[in-house]
Image (cartoon, rainbow, N blue to C red):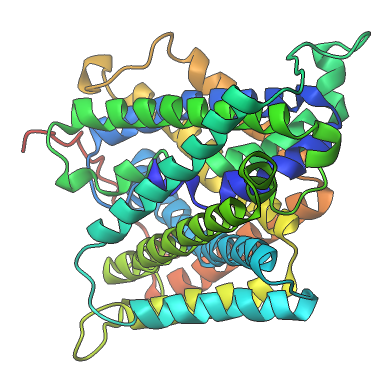
Length: 438
């Protein structure tokens, strides 16, 4: 739940209202929760059946065959991580600079300096051996609950603006889809991402066949309740016509309710959330290219460890450096859309199709967790993810596909050099389902 929140809901809310253009913007948050919940069922089946460290990297490799297509798709997952992970870092840094400008007015270049400086500072802080971020996570979660709780309580008890979930007169749900619900949902889904991170720690979780699905379902439902309550409270305090143009909606709501000093405190809490989540994000993502390289499935340079402190410094510096560049070059809205466009095809749709392939090879009883009404949720997830991918727009779709094609070329070059499939015959043993109790 900590990974899911971060800076996202504090910067995305005005974007969603502006995209929808009306008080029914909350439907985009509901759609985001529904998509996350359905997709969590796919992750639950995979995570419970294969409780291994690495998450998608292992799921794709196992589902499509370790020696052939699975090798390529797992390579592509790590390849797109080299792009989308710095985009995630950049989004948090840009959001940090945005809220910092509430405390001290900043121009465009000053904001870029702040966002870039934050990425550099976090990279330097991570340039050491770190065994645990438990204390930072605890501080982050306290700040998240305090900030969201403050807004929710104030809006519900003091807000007076009328709001409604009903669609505008004469507009159907189909019309709402065409009016920007897909584009708005791209932003809300960004705020829900992270519910699956428990799968990356599968090898360290007790009773994974139960705890992995339960943790994801609790996280999605819990965060959805917080997000919907926060949105409801915000528009009870500030009319949606005004909220859609606010750069620091949290600060504006608290200022309206409790005054400027309280708003400054709330802004400082948002900055703590943003900084801490960036710390955790870059720490986690820097291990993905390293793990794949150490496994012999990615460029060897990313497997290098610091000679004395024993952490993957090449991976950290690469992702931190690219995140620094992205934070200077791109707008926050474009960065958020780019994150989804980079991930949907290989990771989300790829995993859903992979689960179907696994079901064809394995008996149903082999899966410790079974989603209800299989395969209907999987088919719905594939259709919705395709809809969201199209909703990112042609430029982002083409950018995402271009990254995939470059990844395919890079994979073929490395496979040719190493004389691996498809340039050499490969035996393809089917990995059995892992025993969660082993």
